[in-house]
Length: 200
Image 1 (cartoon, rainbow, N blue to C red):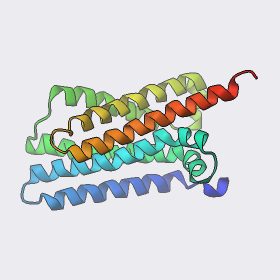
Image 2: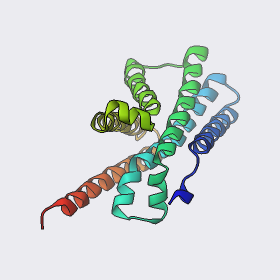
Image 3: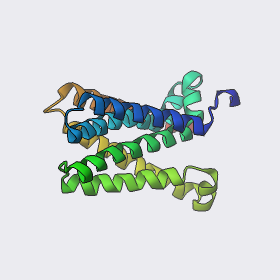
């Protein structure tokens, strides 16, 4: 199984390069207006980081339901994938902050406070994604932190894409369907674990 592990640093670089590429595409598509360009870059980087988040969040469920193959490889590299999401999402924040602070793009209080708490969770989870933190916090506390943070970030994505249903229904519906599928996978995996642990 060790042959399927990819170095964490390489995964983070891949996620980051993809985020910069998405941001560059957004700037190129909206190059006539700097503010709209950075907003487009923020939107595209958010979509890129969302895919990394869903992959990391669903890794355990997929491996439990269908052991082996690429599901096992994804689970084996989940820490790197999660850190890749964090890196990509921080790049997304950079484009968004430039649009707001540099070019006066509007940002509501809900976006600032709700999104700010989400980024706090992302940063804390990234900083504690190591064996030392698991030992220092204890497995139960560490798992609680990452579970609460993961569900909160999932909620942020769900809320954001729900708001896209009116303007971009194809995007909002696709993302919400992916979120729904990830939740159903987690429920199915939990049920399978309970059945396996039930006394015969």
